[in-house]
Image 1 (tube, rainbow, N blue to C red):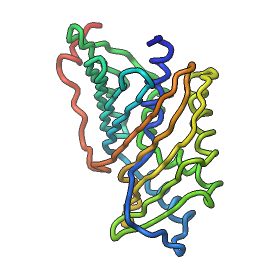
Image 2 (image 1 turned 60 degrees about the horizontal axis):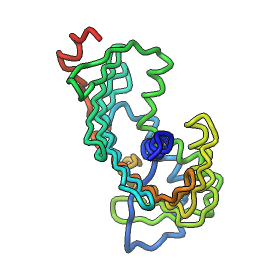
Image 3 (image 1 turned 45 degrees about the vertical axis):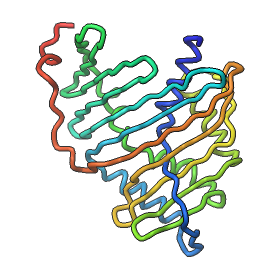
Image 4 (image 1 turned 135 degrees about the vertical axis):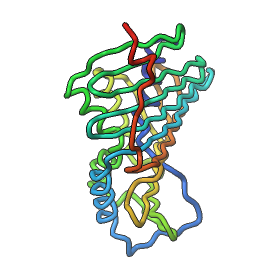
Length: 248
């Protein structure tokens, strides 16, 4: 597979970990105020001080091997401290990254070494928003409330967008182009989005995004499943001694 295509697929997997979980057997309640639920979800997200986010992502390329990644991140916003473990199943690679006190530490699995890098306040602010998926989603959904469905059970609101919603397909294409800094020629279709919001706290619990696409003439199916936990309960990120003492 071309390196450029693998780079695009990796970006698909990591960027679009912004989406949610399938819920079954619940009827939509016409009395639910969609905009109010989404707005309260955004307000709750803005109040998050720490948490854990786990992304399971998979791309199936027509005629090729599936590409799978797991990204497991724990974060404290102020002062910024973060631990992220990226597992690339296809290549049997696990990379661990810590950020603390303005320094990023990244492991090199080939020789168990660590790379240390000072990072700017601007770059640190970019990492602080990794728990803010709901805010980005709200920007997409608020002008398309007539195209989304909200159901509820005893504990949750379940929001879903079914296939053939052009605004989601267009959002995926534009986001990919913005992230890659170029026109990726990605044609997304059949996108579905579903996520679960806790009725008591209005925190997002989980979400799933699926879509079909064509990149560089190859057809693919993409799936990202994201879960949130330990909201406001991550109290400390500890950088291992071997990383702190690295000379790289």
